[in-house]
Amino acid sequence: MRELHDNPELGWWTYEGTEYSRDAGRRKAPVGLTGGEGFGFETSVAARFLLDLLGGTNSLGIDFRRIVRVDWQTRDAGWLADDLVVTFTPGPSGDRAAGISIKSGRQVTAAGFPANFVAAVWAQWLGVGTPGPLAGSNDVLVLVTGELAQNVEAARSRLLREALETTPERLIARLSSPKEDEGSQASELQRALFGSLRCPKEFRHRGETDEKATVHLLRQVRLVPFDYETTPSRRLDEAAADCQRVLRSGDPAGAGELWKRLRAIADEKRPAGRSLDLPELLQELRGQFDLAGHPDFARDWDTLAERSQEEMSDIRTDIGGQTHLPRQDVLAAAQSALNQRGACFLAGESGSGKSALAKEIVAERYRRVIWLTGQMLDHGARSEVERGLHLNQPIIEIARASPVPCLIVFDGVEAYAERALRVAGHFIRDIHGSTAAGHIHFLLSAQVETANRTIRRLAEFGAPPPLLEVTPVPRPLLDDVRLIARHIPGSAGQHGGPSSRPC
Image 1 (cartoon, helix red, strand yellow):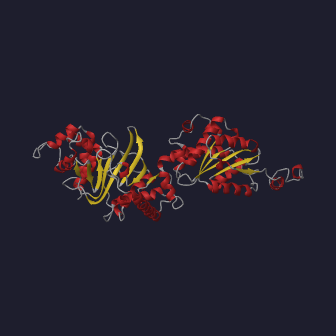
Image 2 (cartoon, helix red, strand yellow; image 1 turned 120 degrees about the vertical axis):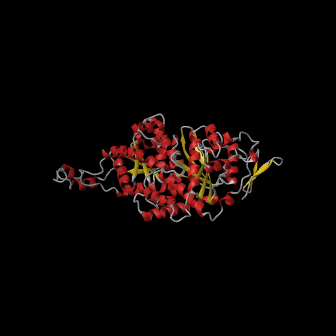
Image 3 (cartoon, helix red, strand yellow; image 1 turned 180 degrees about the horizontal axis):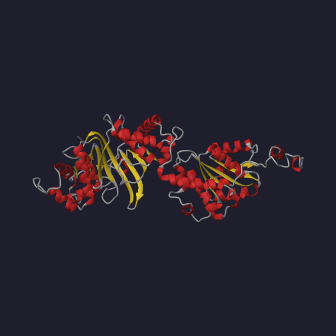
């Protein structure tokens, strides 16, 4: 086992073969070296956290919030437990993340925690060789192991619970009571686990390192077993069930393919020390799996779907409830613009059918739509728009987290007030500029007479000009209208009235 060596004269200490400077920060190991290859157990653990990211679960427990990002090989960011760092949504007390050390096999025994992990925990706690001390933060350090004896797990769980729920003084008193005392509330295993976490002598001159400090440190240490290397594996069964839940079909075979793909992604990201958030992970999976929406965004999507359907319900796409005008050429041009640029700006005269075309495009191509009107956007800031729509999350984050292509429609923008136009421009700018947003498309419509002025204003508010290239919408041909009118019961055209005569 590699140990930590402290050398005050030379100003460095070593942990697991890597040198760290006392004052100038740690000497960074190459990511490719720390990533390595052949890490089957580590790959499965990382895949589990990607599945948590995808499905809104959390393998670290209910006291942690939703996972928003997974990072690999994070020594260069100051983490000493650096195989993975998992970042959570901020809570009432601020940001929170977990640095995770992954070791297969039985790492924690009746003798306690391994010495090299304890050394890393105390170095992180005291800020030795790292710019981010654990003390005073909301972060935790986690040791993920492959095996854990049942009695060790029970003792570890009770010790952590008592550390979180009682004062350091009371816990120390319980652990210090004589072993032969019939009233002792601490087991031998609890004493061994706590004793193994005491500060190594190399750090005792660095600050508060007594038993009270050990209790505070214990509160920010987690031990999580993953039995992926055993048969049968309870954790693997849980992963299979969770993969089924995030698929719309719930198909077991598809769940197996999803788990295989998550492992492949983890295996790819580890050697390069990459990062993934939810939109980036969805980008990796989009087109391969038909995923259900993330549960944290489900209510917001229901709200937006209801509002969008209300707006579209008043738009007619047929004539007399019978048939559509033949607009295939315009539809093809609009779909080509969406495919090539991710945006389409429909411009035509009043009554040319721009809104009807937009509704047809939604029906044919998009399972998710956000239809925004000038009234919805007429606020001083985006946050006010989102409050007005009763959303829990920002619209940008909702759209980025869509597992399928999403269309944002700004209909009739020539009638938008100045504030609404500014908010629309900001939406387009920020969504288009965000990462993993290629599945979000924009559709705008305006009357041709004011289109150029509207486009200039949107560009001034940040909308990229290439997204505002016009797709013309001509008025329907009179002959097409007459042809359709002949087939509408009760119409003048059907009975040879004036409307059927050439103009």
